[in-house]
Amino acid sequence: MQPDRQPAPDTPPRVRLRVGFVLARRFTLCAFANFVDVLRLAADDGDRSRPILCTWSILSDTMEPVRSSCGVAVQPDTRLDRAPPLDYVVVVGGLIDDISHLGPDLVRFLRRSAEAGTALVGVCTGAFILHRAGLMDGYRCCVSWFHHADFLERFDGLVPVSDRIFVVDRDRLTCSGGASSAHLAAHLVEKHVGIAPARKSLQIMIFDADAQADKPQPGVPLDLVPADDLIKRAVLHMRQNFETPLTIAEIARRVGVARRSLERRFDRHLGRSPSDCYMAMRLDQAELLLRSTGQTVAAIATATGFCDTSHFARTYRQRRGSAPSRVRESRVRESCARERSGARG
Image 1 (cartoon, rainbow, N blue to C red):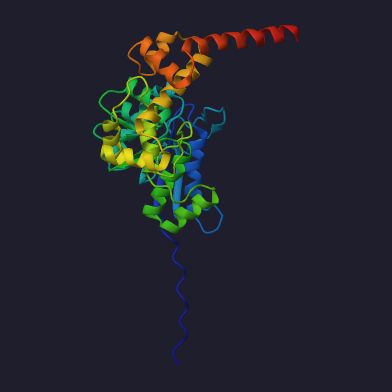
Image 2 (image 1 turned 90 degrees about the horizontal axis):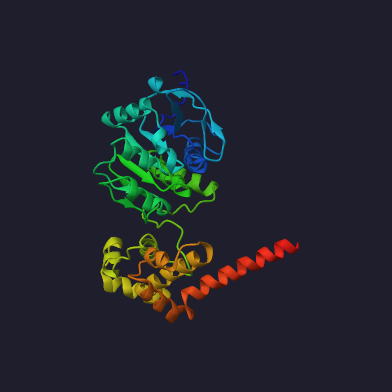
């Protein structure tokens, strides 16, 4: 009789996704937390948080706590010179005025990582940091619609993508921050670990598990909230270009359809033309500036893409039923009334 064979001990699962984080000074805490929590939830069965299938570390040149933009500090756990082999290095940015404060050792580490073939990820304004380090030349780059103008002002030679939640361009991955960092992390989990862990992570965090890279960024104004993602992307391009309005043909080109196709989709979903929606958005912005700032009517006309004050005033009166100067006067009266009421109180 043959002796019973003892079952072989279970082979521990191998790590499939290794991520190192570089946190910029005053980084965005929610963008970092969303990214790392997707890894945490995908790394183990259930909700036990063991780093089995995914591992992550917070890298530092000084090992001093890094303070986020909300004031909460995070303690790094790994020195740069002791960084383990990594599949991705994720740079988490934050306040735009602090993107130049990444130390030279960290910049050299990022460059060495790129040379070694490690993929680099820019989260929030982390894309700005990567570009400033010379690591985004020739790559497409996703930034928040909120920072679109800042990016154009500060960086030449790179056109940002601001109508999608994240962009994957070879070994550079960028996202707009916030909730989109969870979706980018889930994209990496799906690629390296599997679709089920990726979906599980997002569902536990109560995120839309079906959001893909080309899902438009939120922030569509007015009542322009159709189910059609292409229209949302078109509206975001309009929103980013008030001062120098784009032609409808150019907007159609940017979202990848013919002009007539875009016009038909606007009509079907909104009952309005793209031109009408664009003008309504510009006038909404003008009214906001008239009621909330001390800018002159001429300055507001320029800021919202009108060739001169008379053209702005005529268009505003035709569509809104009163002159811009009347809106400004009513703002002044309301302000004076509030001051009188406060003085009486």
